[in-house]
Image 1: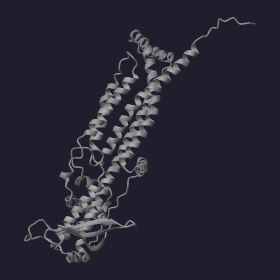
Image 2: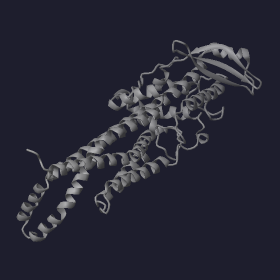
Image 3: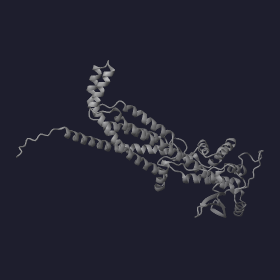
Image 4: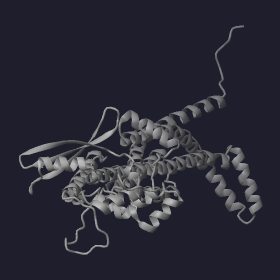
Length: 434
């Protein structure tokens, strides 16, 4: 290639605790979807163990509160005008029933802190993974586009096309192949109405080409034909070949073929790295410019700000992908399912923890709005991977809640039985022989 660049982009995979686990599971299972599902199952199982302890404390405190309530109401009525005395008597009641206000809140606070820590850190990791995969996929197809366009400068390939002959109804096809050692190369074919002819020329694939925005733009500016009429006056004379148009079409075809072959979807979702919404599964120009800018140094940022190479290149590279044929990435179904399962799991947990005849706790109703709203926002706005993690976690909670509640009830009954045995005085009226 005869265009030298000063701007080189090197993508680096995100690192961290969750990324290490995700990559390990992905390498073993083959896809990020299965990795995320497995993480959701493991996290929910671990939190179920914490939930058992938390529910045990909650159930015990609820029972103590129900016993203390009549006495506390009486104290409030009797000493309502004397706050100091009322507090003293209240503390006496707490001591009588061995109730510790702080101790009853600590398990719940620890559980909430752990859950939100996992929630936020995993969300951040999955978003970073998604952004990286989008950027990497774009770099790959940009590289393919640039390499195919670069064939214009290869006299060996052009002479091979001349030998075969390119008719009016013929077109060019370029295949990107991989050697045993991992290196890539391109083969050029002339496709006629009744046959496909290999021109017998192989072209080395330059893996670093897409990392150079100036180089790619230089190729486009040099070899891609202008859409204006042939007699129009242009500021810069392009170095084009008589095969430039056909090579451009071959580049578009190669980009679309690679995009479709490497697209990662799940169920009805076309692109798992974007939000499941009624928009195109193809990444947008704004997304690409935002994600790739994270890898620029100060000099590269200045060059891009001045020239907007990435924005200009994007329009050419994506032109070959039929976005209308791809359809929509989703219909907000993940958001609806995530919110519904969140409300249902909260209701089920509340319902199973409440004893017969016991009124629902007032503060729990706020959770029916707050938690589903938070979950709805994150599934609506961010990567589908995180939405799937949340849904699997909620479904696991629906399955495990009856089991954890049963364990807590058995545990509580066992403790009550042992406590009762200790307080009972056993009198033996049998005659004993001396």
